[in-house]
Image (cartoon, rainbow, N blue to C red):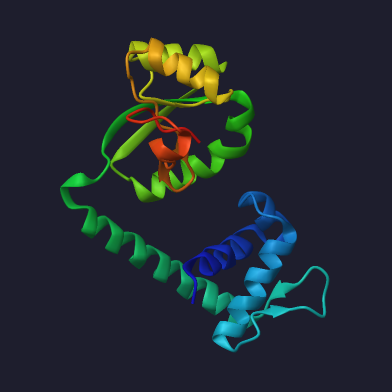
Length: 189
């Protein structure tokens, strides 16, 4: 069973339907629907009454959603235990280019609160060039910026190797230097 399916089930239960769950999780309606069908198949259970529009949770579906919350909390605790001393903690200032903030910021903050309870994030928005300068000066710890690879390389060189890491919904960063084509350089989305 896929934990993402359980996350989606809880989101459907919390938001009241597939459409609001899709919006809340930045997924398409069809992706939410397919995940719920796969979860029903995995559990061999009918979690939704699809004779009504929109589909609604059955009594069994509500019980499964409640249990899924417990499973997801237990999973988060296991991850926290395994992190040990390497857990992300402290205050962080993160910048987002405005277009990225609209799409990525809500999910980032939700995931960051759940995944990094000892960390707090202050968010700033601005233009890529200003955010990069703020990272270089230390006013920001990280930034999600847009631009061509050439522009980002130029700023990387100008910043004397200051590493800029992008915040994603599942953690801090996640594109390798080699994928970006920069040996010993910054990570970019």
